Image 1: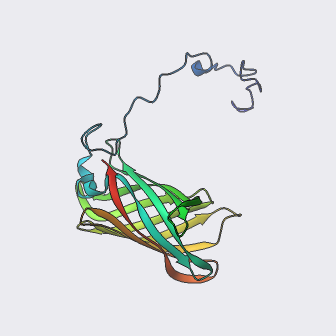
Image 2: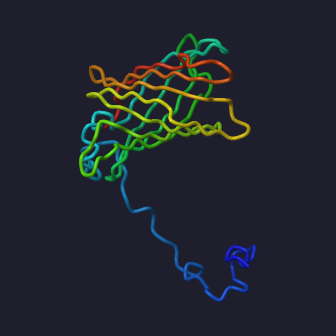
Image 3: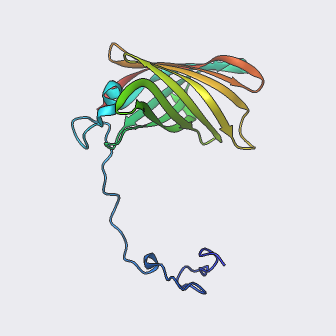
Length: 208
């Protein structure tokens, strides 16, 4: 019998488990003790391997335009938070919402979380990146990226999706910091359509 199978449903005792794991009766733990920050003035020191990505750290908000061959064009607003906890990767979180013609919020739209990691050659930081991007609609994309100055170009190396997710097969994204703003364009191949323009936006820094 496995350790999991030996636990009672109530979780209050253990049967047929001679190990008696110490965590069963241990006291509660304190809140997560390590800070994550989107503001370089506070929190942990940025990992040296992320120095070239420093301009991206912050909270960004703005608007964009979306579309695809199978849907009508739409306007949206978006907030992106890019943060770090002192380790050699960035945490990426995006929330978007649809706007009407008067720029009023209509409904929630896409959400996404992910991690950007610089590729190291021994101790040397290269201009290559790896990124994982995951959506609540059942799609996870593994991106391989190339950095040139403050511009990053990502292309999918693999797309994994659940059985109920939309058929997404490939993607490409271009990010850049232009005159202090975060600009990006995203292409997608999905539902039988080839790689096509999907999203583009301009976001301004609101924190960090």
